[in-house]
Image (cartoon, rainbow, N blue to C red; front, side):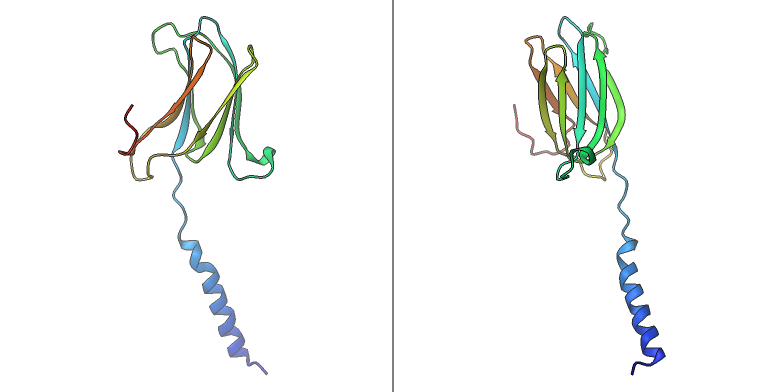
Length: 146
């Protein structure tokens, strides 16, 4: 028959083991900005969504959604920007030009460490030829030379 002392010791050991992992609270990740540049002659009726990877339910994977009309750039800093929309994690970014019913996607992967001070973001550029180009902040020195 177990003694009261043995029972209390076992309970205390279990509680300490359970709390041991709680001391390593992850640091908050920096926030990501989204910038859209429209170098076309007409406005773009933009739909954009960010999805978390590895989530089975699409509704639970949705991290950000927005619809906006992006006017053509006039040569100055006219790019549309939404700041601090999601934390810097991997995402599948889907953009739709609803005027043309043209959709594209991009797989965003963070490239900078938490210790590096940096402004992170994704740039979506609507090209005059009808194409869309994506780019993102990079910090690594092993980026390919273009």
